[in-house]
Image (cartoon, rainbow, N blue to C red; front, top):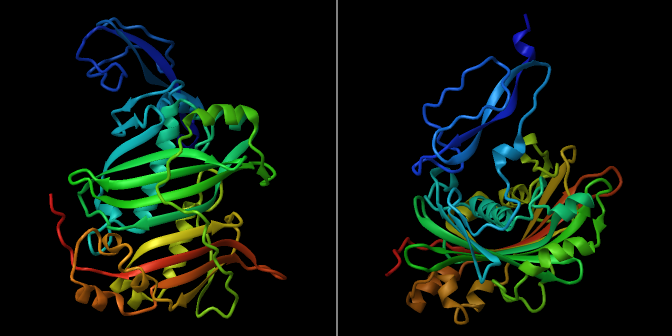
Length: 393
């Protein structure tokens, strides 16, 4: 008799033909269907109505575990226009993507607003779903079929997120995303987040991506076959207008705030086996004093990625405040963004914006015996937390 520790299930697929117009064509509602037979089943055809679906049956196998990932994921091989399961659809004349999401309870902080980590995760998820809908997705982390054949993966080199207002728990938001060219070998991806109820824009984001060889971990040129795959999806549209990217100064060990001996956990690794960029942001923000974070909220973050971080790296987070009055200087130029879309008297704004610092420079680096290596440089801009004011319709 086989030991319980060596018992695994092998998935095989039973073909089922059915003809009810009320039956789910994707086979997710099989109902009270019973398939007779032994523990090992060959493909079984059952006439129910006029649709053909596939269900997974199991076989008892010792020391073997075979899972039909392709069947379970159901990755499209052709372009899709609507995804009812993810509440997504293709927009922008067939090349952009829009997804409707609800802010969950685990995506908000103590003030019941979505955390920056949650927003970054939503950006990543909608980007991957966009590739999913395109029919170009292979089994990689957003990689196309051409990238898989060339052993290439995407890595982000730069990212900027501007947040005017944070969604609240239970709020329905729409996230639009699209891609464009960035030089000869890069790709730009942008996003816009807005309220489903009012149309107010909550946040904007832009990013630059390049390709890396999965084995050598070196950057790679974009192969012609990959360019042919993705270039038809490029559009000339920018969520954040940036004529000249802002340069971020490098910090040294004399930074005012330092958090050392940070170690990645297994849960911090993504499908490409390096630390997810959302974790980098968490390490940065944890270095800022708690008292400042209680009274302020992030309005802008810029990240410049220099090196990937692995599971064995020891990371140090450095942070330096910049007392430059950046928000106060920009008060009259962009009042709407600074006050979450609301008009307040200038005297009230002066009270909120007169205290500093409002900007921090960040650096994450790996600690080495002889030399430290940069992982990512960052800059965060903050504004005083304002009282919650409902949007007007």
